[in-house]
Image (cartoon, rainbow, N blue to C red):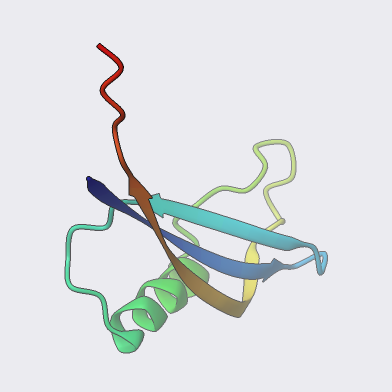
Length: 78
């Protein structure tokens, strides 16, 4: 049995549309402060491009974050 994790960071953009960034299997121990620091960095440093055709479109505010755990169990059918 294997467990996988997905961190979903939710933002509002400058056009008030909801945007999400999904990070599969984050390797570092996550704390609320580290997640918030990452999300603030995305907003403040404008390091991620949302739309190449609309350079003024940016991540504007934090909506929240979710950490999802999924358990995968292989079934041996042979």
